[in-house]
Length: 116
Image 1 (cartoon, helix red, strand yellow):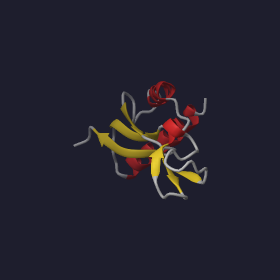
Image 2: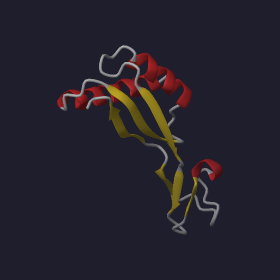
Image 3: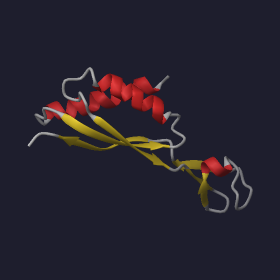
Image 4: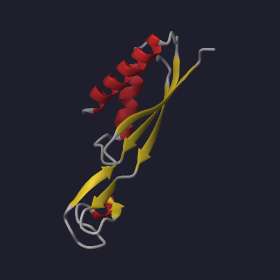
């Protein structure tokens, strides 16, 4: 379960920024997760809760996940298409000269605080 390692990294980053800005409590974190990022949202939520419950700054913090659609670009026809639906082969021209352009990322989109 690599979700725990990703959660540790995110919590470390959020705590670091909170401390740099004298924030006492983080109430919500919003993440963008690509649909082919290999992150399982339910596992991730469980790991996030377990980890943040051990953090003074993030205890009780809520998590909002935004799932980003995976899109692939075809070098042959210059089109884009849904990766999960069609895989590596372009549905427009049947080329396999394609590459993923979105959908594998994990981004911290926003962090909310209770502080005034």
